Length: 157
Image 1 (cartoon, rainbow, N blue to C red):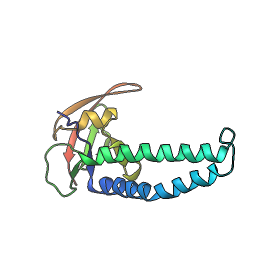
Image 2: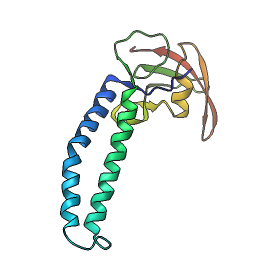
Image 3: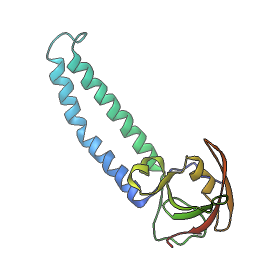
């Protein structure tokens, strides 16, 4: 069912690409910070040096993670026609026991903070909805038990 390749909306892909470029541009600044801190003397008790090395390590780890995720990424375009729930496409669901409706846009975890009414593809609701079609009913395990949702529509309403 789900591909192992990371999937992003165009906006999410571009946002991560910009972050990667920014981190790469910061490399020389981090190297300079380490050099300056090293010149302050004894490295065993040099907090500026250790902080600079930690910052460099975190930046390099994030660069590696972003390069890996973006290299094989599938970018989904918002205007694509679809009849099943996929990343970046709004979906409206109705809770079967209450009749309450709600719309979600399923996104990658990295995009979650950037999307209104977003649900991570890794969340219980997001993973249950992916690949389903209008009319399908899905069961979602929540903190208060299993909830049933009917998919009312897929795509902009």
